[in-house]
Image (cartoon, rainbow, N blue to C red; front, side):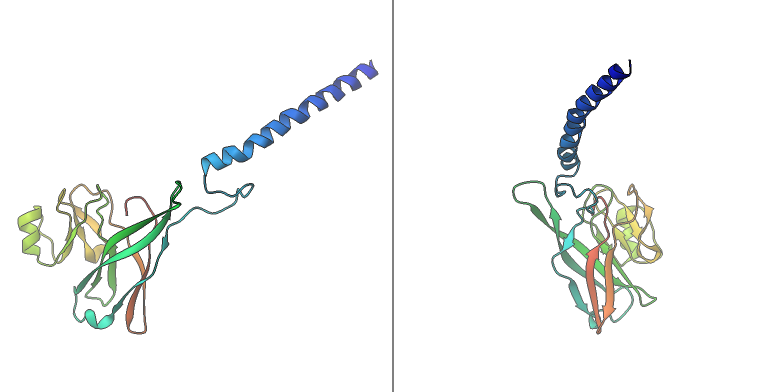
Length: 188
């Protein structure tokens, strides 16, 4: 009886080798299916984040008083799962000097459905066209009338937008405003 058990265990072991081998062989292609840009057997690789092509730089002399605004286009490269390999996006943005001396630097793409919104410095213009009277300058989307309060971190104060627009990462150095990156997320 001892001999049969040993033979049975030996046969189970021999059968387990091809089954485990097949599972291990299928693991790498399955992981590459889930994340196409992953290198073989490099499962701890970080996410494919967009990269900026070059920073946008403004001289601080362009922002002499509160609510001085500068429009800009930020160029970003994204990984693409085609033969081309990358996609270049041109993201419109606004840099605005706040009364506190800080800056509000936001993407101009509305988080509702991706329309490009405007900087509206005059509250009377917003009251006429957007059915909302703000306390000061705001961002306002002409497509579905979303209004964002610049002085409250881009808070949605009117309209269907689900959240504030995406912020740009920036720093002030050498008398310049340097915009280096866009916060990650869905609709830019």
